[in-house]
Image (cartoon, rainbow, N blue to C red; front, side):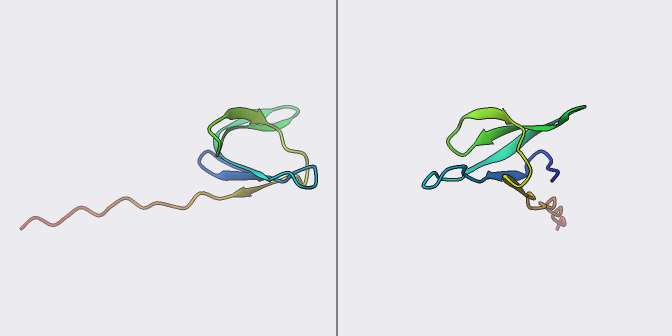
Length: 73
């Protein structure tokens, strides 16, 4: 799993009845012991997370193309 800034991360709950957490990846932090993500969660909080295998999934950010310039009349 590898994400990049602006991608979404979805962290599955570890307990029955607890909701999943979703947020936007703000920064990817590479280290010798693994990759961490700085995330702004949908509730407005920010934290750093290092998801365990299978506990999270990354949803790629949509590609936004630049608007085309208007032709002059």
